[in-house]
Length: 377
Image (cartoon, rainbow, N blue to C red; front, side, top):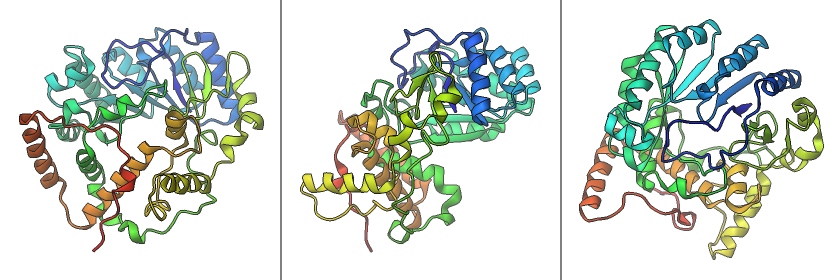
C-alpha cells in the first residue's frame, strides 16, 4: 500500500501532484489503528510518502509501529529533515529503502525545481548519512524542462555515492486530474532518450515490438485495487495514486473490512485488457484511423490515468497511448543499435538550437497515436 501520511511539505516543486492540502491528516491514534487494520488485511509492503513524511512530528512513532507490525517499509522523501539521529533510528528500524528526489547534480537546476535554496546539499547529506548506515538509497529523477540538459549527472552522482538511480520520462497528472504537469517534461524524442537511458543496461533482454508475444486479453492490466492501493493523508482509500476514485474512508470503516468488501471494488477487479483494446479500437475508428494499433497487445494500459483523463477507468487515454509509443520506439532504437550517449548529445544540440530560435523544448499532449506507426525494415 502507498500511504501519503501528510500533505505538508516545505518544498514547492514545480511538478508536485498534490493540489488539496486543506483536509486534516490522520492523527497518530488513527494512523496506528490503520496500520493494525492493514496488517489484518494481509498488507506486507508499505510505502510512506507525502508531502514529506518527516514533516509529521509523529512520523517516527508511526514508523516504529509499522515495523513492530513487521511491514516492509519504503519511504519517499526529499531528505532535508533527516538528521544524524533520525538516520540512526531508520537504521535501527531496518527500513528497506529510502528514495530521495534529486533533479540534477547542479544546485541551481535542482533548486529551480524545488524552489528552496540549499535543498540539494541537504538531500545529498541525507543520502550519505543513510548509505553509511547500510540503508538502501534510491535517487529518483523525473525528466523535466528544467533538467533536460543535465539530468544524467544524477546517475553519475548516484554511482559516486553508492546509491541506485531511477529516471522517469513520464510526469504524472495532479490529484485533481489536471494533465498540465504531464507537459512539464521533455519533447517526444527527449522522453524516448530517457527511456533508452533506463533500459540501456538491459539492452540484450529486449525484442523488437513486432515480435513480442501478445499479452493475453483476459489479463488484468495492473495491481491497482487488487493487490495494491493508495491512502490519502486524511484516510481516503483509492485504487492507486492516479486512480482517485474514492472507495471509502478509514475514518468511517476499518481498512480490512473495506478491502474485503467486493461491492466497491467489483468494477475495478473485473477490468481486463480486452476492455481497453475495445475502447482503443473504437477511438481510432472515431478519429478516422484504419486498423488496430500496432502496439495494442503490448500497451501498458493504465486505468488510473484513463480515469484521471476521461473520467472512466476503462476509457481511452491519449497520454497512455503516447507513453506506450515512446517506450516502444525506445526499444526499437536500442535494438537498431542507437547509443544513449549519442542520442542525448544530438537532442541537447537540437534543444539549444530550438532555444536560440525561441522554440519551446516541450510539446503539448498530441494525438500522436494516429501518426506514430512502428518503424519497419
